[in-house]
Image (tube, rainbow, N blue to C red):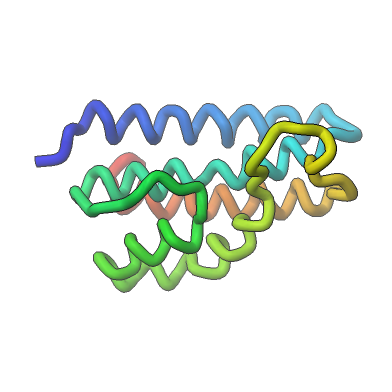
Length: 130
């Protein structure tokens, strides 16, 4: 049996990132790149599913790789494949300003959070957390 405490820690941290970004999107007229990044952190929902099902994975932030692990275990993950692909571009490998993405818009942030929300609901349903 998977360690439910660890699964819930992944979900709690993912919810924290998602809800933080969702709230700040309502208030912000800028800072769209960090909000998009927080949407990408839906990776943590995928990791919660992986841990819950005792699937092997390496340390990665690649949503496509994590999605493929989930999809091999459960074919219905095809329902959120496009979402995983869309969010992948918002990951930032470093926090140094010279490589921080710029040019993201409110529309990008709205889309990133909508997509993350679909992954969030999908995984929570799979984990019976709704």
